Every structure is written in structure tokens, then in C-alpha cells.
Length: 296
Image (cartoon, rainbow, N blue to C red; front, side, top):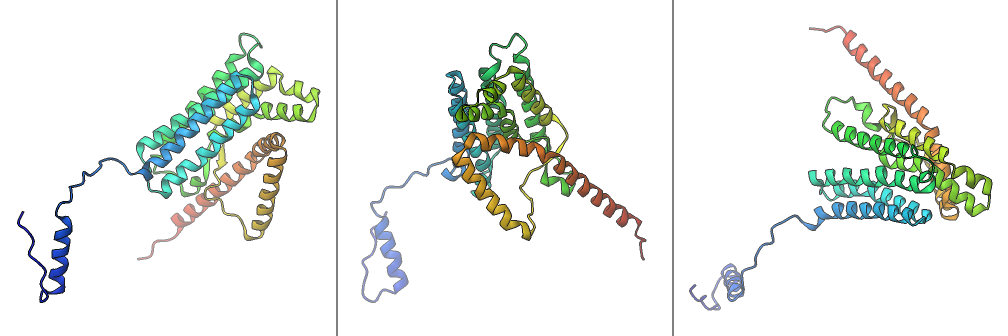
């Protein structure tokens, strides 16, 4: 490389800048470019991994009969599951690997871990067939996740169906099936042995597992709340109700979670009615368009 020429007083400003840049580059070592994905694209996968670790920790806590910590670990996994996909879309870091990893994490955290917690909660010494409801729940969760992944490539779905899930989503199913654990922990806190014995009855856990498994693989349309629009007059009551529930959740978490599960099941018929109302309106609109005369 030839030495740069000296900067004279009569050198034009543009040429001076080029000479200064050339002088700065002399003696500088070339930098090696790092090949690989940016850190932004790794953040959603890191969050998914943390959620998976939380679900596995919940299984460990259940094995040690620390059911309060196990429930908290699964709740943390559910919160992370609700955030990682949105963060991936926000950072434009959605990948095929991330989608598959998230699905496998959901199966472990919401399919395997809840049934294992209930097995240790009340079904471990309930007989040779006590394991069957746990197997049913886990298998139905796998089928539900597989159906959801297959439906992502379906471009023929009507517009109104994008606001609904087909069957209860995985985190909600885990919350519903853990109702006996929430109820039992609340009964222990309140000192009511009758309710605690009821919550630890094997038949109660078995019914919750079978009932939730049926909701997972059903074709019941369930609100997804992603594109759910709230009327203006209900915005303030909704915010106040959310604030009230958050306060109750902090003060009495197990009772609030048990009531939330019951309320979620209670709104499922209203979700089905809303879906069929939208479906009928879309069909009537389609028939009206087809019956219109074609003008030349």
C-alpha cells in the first residue's frame, strides 16, 4: 500500500476528508465478521427455555410434595408462554425453530407437568387404574397442540374464526386441571379439613383430568381474546375488575386461581354462542351477495 499524500493548505475539503479516512485506516487490523443470528432473534427462544425450566421445576417440587411451589412454577411457565410469542413478533424474531421449540415446551409444561402434579397430589396410591386419567390428559394435550400446529397452515379458515381457538388452549387447560390443587391449598390456608379432604379425593382429580382432556380435543370454539374488542362502555368496568382481581390474587392467590378456573369454564357456553352468531351472520351475508342480480 502506498503512503498517503500529505494534506496541503490548498487541498479541497472533500479530498482532505478522504485523506484523513485513509490515514485512520492505516495500521488498523481488519475485523472478522461474526456470522450467526442476532441476539434479538434469540430472546424469544431464551424465554421459551426459561418457561420449560419452570415446568420441569414444577415437576421436581411435586416430587418433593411442595405443591405450592409446583403451582407457582407452572404459573410462571404460563406467563412466559403468553409473552414469548408476542416478543418474537415484536422483535421480528419468529423462526420455524422457535415455533417448534415453543410447541414442545408447551407439551411438557402444560401436558406432562400438570398430570404429574395431580398424580403426586392424590392419585399415587389410588389403585392400578389411577394413572389412566393422567395418560388421557397428556395424550389429549399432545393431540390438541398437534391440531393447533396443523391449523396454522390452513388458509381457508373464515375471517370470523381467527378470534377463536378450537378447543381449550394449553395454558388454560393446565389451569383448569389444577383446580383440586388450588382448592386444597386454599382449604389448608383457611383451616377447613372437610374441603381439603374433598380436594385430595382421587375421584376429584380423575374427573378434572378427564373433563379437561375432553375440552382440549373438542371442537368447542373458545375465545382467544387476541382480537377481542371491548365496547367503550365496558372499558372502565373491565379495568376496575382486572385491578380488583389482581389485588385478590396477591392477597389470596389459591382462592383467586380456583375461582378463575371455574369462571373460565362458565364462559365457554357464551363463547360457543358468540361463534355461531358470527358464523350465521357471515353465512347470511354470503347468501345475500350470491342473490344479488348481476348488472351488465
